[in-house]
Image 1 (cartoon, rainbow, N blue to C red):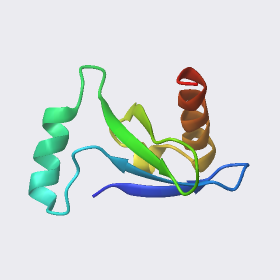
Image 2 (cartoon, rainbow, N blue to C red):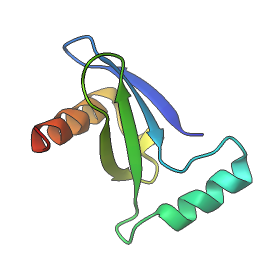
Image 3 (tube, rainbow, N blue to C red):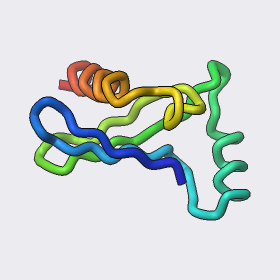
Image 4 (cartoon, helix red, strand yellow):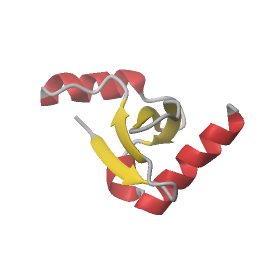
Length: 84
């Protein structure tokens, strides 16, 4: 399961998990193949530690490895702005 935690400037800890990922590697890989869109992106759900609302992001397939913390936090903040 692809999961990552980042903390924003307001000290909210966000746990981000690729949607449809599972602990069993073969099943997770198949789910990723089915979920990947034509732009090569997958849905990632980020859940806050506090009172903020969960956000859904469309990120590159290898988001966990290629995105630094700052870029992931920016994506979360931009998504929050769009939905507020």
